[in-house]
Picture 1 (cartoon, rainbow, N blue to C red):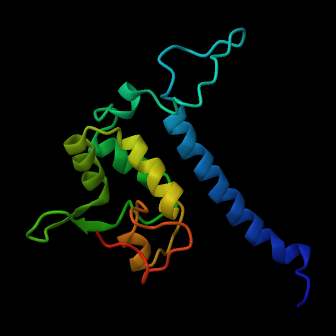
Picture 2: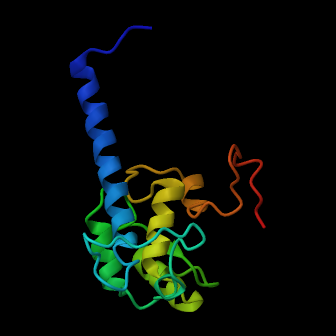
Length: 155
C-alpha cells in the first residue's frame, strides 16, 4: 500500500472539511434554538444530562416554513434540494422540503430536528450521490449499528 502524497490528500481533506463544516452548521442551527434567553459570558447555564432539548423547542413545528426548509437545503451540497419523494398513497411526488414540513406539522416536531437527524443518520445534507437504500432509510429508523439492508427491520 503506497502512502498518499500531500497533494493527493488535499481533495480528501477538502471534502472532509466541507462535510464537517456542514455538520457543525446543521448542529448549530438546532442548538442555536435551544436557549430561550441569550447566552451570557458571565453565567453559563448548568448542564443537565437529562435535558438534551427543551420540549417547547423540540415541538416548535412552526419554526421553519417549507420555503425556509427549501432555502436551507439549497445552501448545502446534498441532493435533497432537488429530490422528489412520494408521501401520498397515490404516489404523488413532492419536494423533500415540503415532505419535511408536512411531517413536522403532522407530528408537531421542529423541522430543524428532522434536518439534523437526516444529516446525523445518513449525511443527506452533504452526500452528493446517496444510494436508493440510503434515501429509503434516511432517518435511520430500524437501522441499528452494524445492520445491513438485509438485516434492517422494515416494520
